[in-house]
Image (tube, one colour):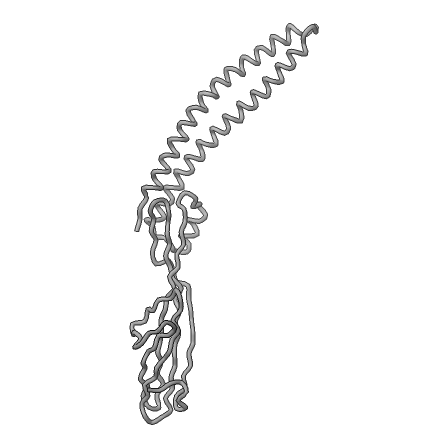
Length: 231
């Protein structure tokens, strides 16, 4: 059994790491979970300058969060070290590779995923066509809800403007009392108020219908999100 302190042995190591692609995507109860991992490979190189074979014990550190992915299992494991036995023939160089991976996880609320995020997922190839199609259907329904909401806001805004204008007309009507133009202007202002009341009635009905439609479309969106299950 030989260690790095053996003068006939020269031992060195090199580390390389890489960010891997997403390995799995799951969607359940309105949450998308992407699982991926960082892989790290440490290569140990051993040169035996002696005329006799050596059996080298490689001590590799145990690191929190990392999982061993190498096929070769350690001959001994402690809280801090994994020990591997590597034979090295006389006057030969041997290499031993330890592959490890640190699993990582990201979660996204389906209801808040944007179109730009979906485009990014597609470019990164972190979702497949099935997930992409499901997310785009959600985005389409969100657009429907947003469109109905915008129309309702437009109704509310127009009603608010009419209320303000009616207040102005009533103030003008009060100021006309006793003036020569009172009769003609009162008739004109009254006509405007009547037209506005008719328009307000139309807007109230439209706003009520849009409120019901918005609630219905939002419920549909909520069901789509909660019922979506992939992986």
